Image (tube, rainbow, N blue to C red; front, side, top):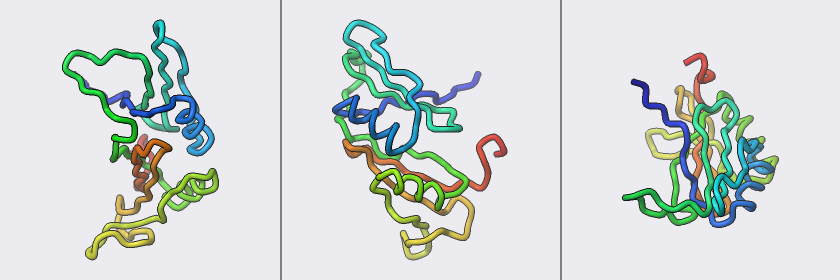
Amino acid sequence: MEWTLEVVTLPVSDLDRAKEFYETKCGFKADLDSEVAPGVRVIQFTPPGSRCSFAMVTGLPLAPGQEAMAPGSLHGLQVCVTDIEAARAELAGRGVDVTPVRTLGARGWEDGKGEAEWSSFCFFKDPDGNGWTVQEAPAPLSAR
């Protein structure tokens, strides 16, 4: 049996503001923006090339045993790209407050692209403060 991670819920305070950020600033296209039941709205995005989506929801009752996440409380969401410098430039060019490219080396985080595979990153937050990591991968997902 396969267990595929396909959707992550992203806690936001304003769906329209978040949708604008992810479409305009990040360049992601909404897969769905719909009232799926009376008073329940879902906006779902899939980053280009990703097999996992993220959804922002309002009006949906919590499932049994679940706890509500405060807007901005999700950190460590990670997407991979094959050109970290181009990805960072695209985000910055769209108005995202994104960190410089950094690498984790012997002395901790240092500015600049790393020499080793998988060692280069940049970071940004959405308007609510949800934290994203962009990591450079050595090849597209389909080739790994």
